[in-house]
Length: 72
Image (cartoon, rainbow, N blue to C red; front, side, top):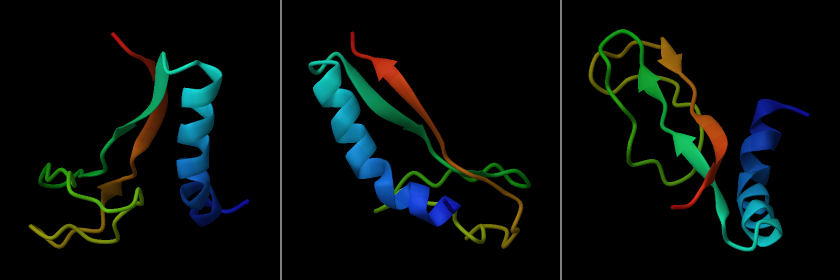
């Protein structure tokens, strides 16, 4: 499975986590950020690793991190 395939399955994973936990848990995302200037990619339409920083044009991007979190 490629990284691209994983990103495509994240919506299904999020719904599954919510269903199996009966709404007590959810799939959280720490957004990607530029390791050179610190720019945080907050407004992504789909979870992905951006290729280049819009501020400094660096390709040194930390990918998003996903974790299952408990509500409340």
